[in-house]
Image (cartoon, rainbow, N blue to C red; front, side, top):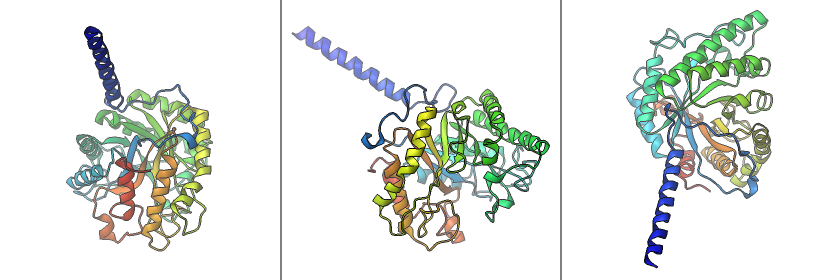
Length: 385
């Protein structure tokens, strides 16, 4: 009896050790220094959402916006303090968002991105600052998505936006595309050099992705030659999501998740969560069709009355902290049970934590130091649901 008992104990110990090693490896980086890529195979949406249990949110992220002042932006002590504060509420990913600039939506050139030192268009930030910011995150155990954006003065009044970027002739488009490729490959190399854990090849470029898919496939292939981590693209929630034909070439479906919830100003959390259902069913069909997991590369609400009906709006509405709080709670309740949903990057926080107070931006997008932050902390620290 005694030898048999000892043998059983030994086998159980070995099994437990192997399981622990397996679980530990699942959270490790790959040898290249990046987060592991999702593995193809099992259909990511095969489990019915209504029967799935709530699960830990894998990507508990935030878009961390650069403040264009020396000492307050990327790589600064101010940003390091903000990261410490964000980690305390459960953040384990940050999206760093460098910008390329163009004069207008139909411009043929993107500027201000490739200088190793800070360029004329943004004297507060250069490539070294981005590398320093990525280093600050990694020192704190926070993983990094590098997510380049385009910006133009044409976008300020809302008449133009990323989705209207297009050129009037094939020749003009070819010139713009060469410029865009240069920007993306520049940042892809930077991502590889600095060990960024995820790279996003574009954000909401609706007119480009839907009309030039072959160019995007070539760009994705060329990006993989210089960056060895996982790739995504941040698609517009309405005008682009199902029209993209190159999801199979990427590792994650990325979405800027400003889905409208058509409910009254006084809607409860339960009503808001139910209003998410048609949007989630739509995403689930895409996840099934492409066998790709989903990330919300941007998601958030302003503290304004009815913020959930048109969540993409930057201005307007009466200050309403509770509307923002309810919207955040409903979003987490609705999404976390879905097996294809891997997490999100909230929009947004700033490298300078005092910016909003200094500018009087109480109705701005940030959730920081508002009641909604308590909701984020609850869900990101694993106490939601």
